[in-house]
Image 1 (tube, rainbow, N blue to C red):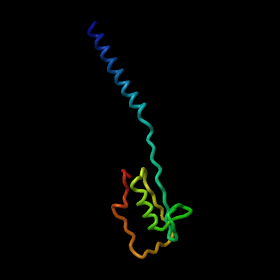
Image 2 (cartoon, rainbow, N blue to C red; image 1 turned 90 degrees about the vertical axis):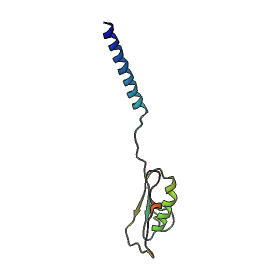
Image 3 (cartoon, rainbow, N blue to C red; image 1 turned 30 degrees about the vertical axis):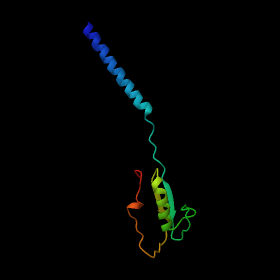
Image 4 (cartoon, rainbow, N blue to C red; image 1 turned 180 degrees about the vertical axis):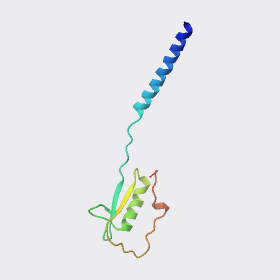
Length: 104
């Protein structure tokens, strides 16, 4: 009989520890939220540096705004190009420095 009791006590101890670990993991895990991206707008007739839907900036203005935001970004940065013809005096180029940072 003592052998049966020690097994039962050992099993309940293991199950208790396992239950405690599961409860601890569930209580510390918070919900995962996707960070809201920064949204910028550019248009062929855009100017300034607001880069909003109501006041879009130029293509180069959007690129400059992204360059200023990128070092501290905590979410993605989306740039929407409004309709129209973008007439450029030179090619518009994006390089590695224009890419995301901080995992974005």
